[in-house]
Amino acid sequence: MPIYPPEPFRIKVTEPIHLIPPAEREAALRDAGYNLFSMKAEAIYIDLLTDSGTGAMSQEQWAALMRGDESYAGARSYYRLKAAVEDIFGFKYFVPTHQGRAAENILSACLVKPGQYIPSNMHFDTTDANIRARGGRPTNLIIDEAFDPANLHPFKGNMDTAKLRAFIEKTGADNIPFGMMTVTNNAGGGQPISMENIKATAAVYHEYGIPFFIDAARCAENAYFIKLREKGYENKSVIEIVREMFSAADGMTMSAKKDAIVNIGGLLCMNDEKLFANVKNELILREGFPTYGGLAGRDLEAMSVGLYEGLDEAYLAYRLAQTAYLVTRLNEAGIPTIQPAGGHAVYIDAHAVLPHIPQAEFPAQALCVELYREGAIRGVEIGSVMFAYPDPDSGKTIYPKLELLRLAIPRRTYTQTHMDYVADCAARIKSRAVQVRGYKFTYAPELLRHFTARFEPL
Ligand code: F0G
View 1 (cartoon, rainbow, N blue to C red):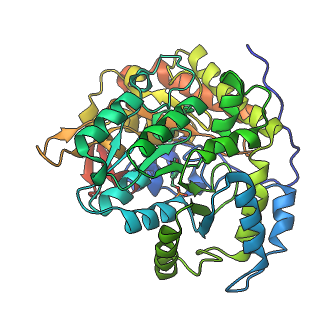
View 2 (cartoon, rainbow, N blue to C red; view 1 turned 120 degrees about the vertical axis):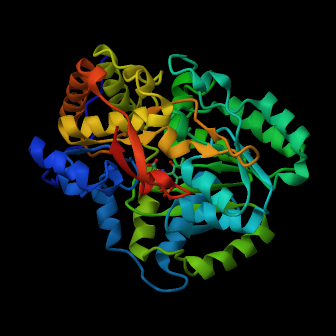
């Protein structure tokens, strides 16, 4: 077993958690329509639903909250955030937003026209849905290795730049208002993108005059993977790597609830002055004045501090090692996961654990329910519930290539013992996997259906 660094912090404030008995868990499942999004958080023991907004803030962040300037316009807290954003990302213009999807909505509102395409390595669900909501067509052009869970490619989030070029040639650059890239690739295993690939992708977009936006939710974790794995970056600091990554782009959307370790917040950055003017109008309409963007002044303060803490290398070493530890423990129990370990989450290959359940019966959802039943652990389905959709041309259901159960690890929140508990519960499910059954919808909305769907066991 490799050596994992201990937590680079000690615990000053605690929050109690309780394991409710099996009968209560069963009732909670029934009440929630077998959708763990619909469950009371108090019924959960270890909550790995998301790493978004669930991290523990530091003493410096809590102290910064007290400095929050709640002025409606021109608050001190805005200027502190502006300095951090400029220092780290280097874009000319930015607005705060209440979270990542607000930035995506504003960008889509300003740039996407019906029928237009927005390529990416792989869009996350909210980005995908925000583009679709404007009549756009999100398109994923990741390398093929991403679809092979066992493949050990060190940068499995990379864009396939040959596919991208062919796609632009076929679609026409005029039909592509902007291109994207998600770092790290959340929907495909939290896998990183190499610096070489970021620059190559930028070069293709720019050759065709297409602006390049990065979805920066987990850019710090991505930068640390570059430091660990990409030749020439081993002696660069993470902040230098981040600056280099973003110097290739024309803008970014960011959910600060991930690598900036805040409970709420986001960013939309760009270099284009005309776009910035439109973004500000859209922001005022839906979010708030451009110097607070739907957040309280204290939230801006926590973000300013958290943006730097997320780049701390001792923290990132521990962070990626904690994820790798859970992967190792699960694999030792015979539970296949996406390899190599990603940054923020473990992705169990539900297809491999429950091969007898077809995609139309939601194997990853079945595994998700089972993990709750076994140990009151909450993960999230990333498979057919989240990503199967009718083809706009043929009307036929298109299923995703992977059926995954994601266990996302909140930052600085759970210890190694918690990870051991999760691995032990998963191992017990593995031993009774043949008895696990699939599910069918009793309700499903058209967009983002995983949040509110209800199910019934088959
Ligand atoms: N982009 C990526 C890559 C994300 O993972 C998320 C959120 C968003 C954008 C949207 O940001 O939640 O602040 O509006 N992902 C969360 C998750 C919800 O659980 O992975 P948001």
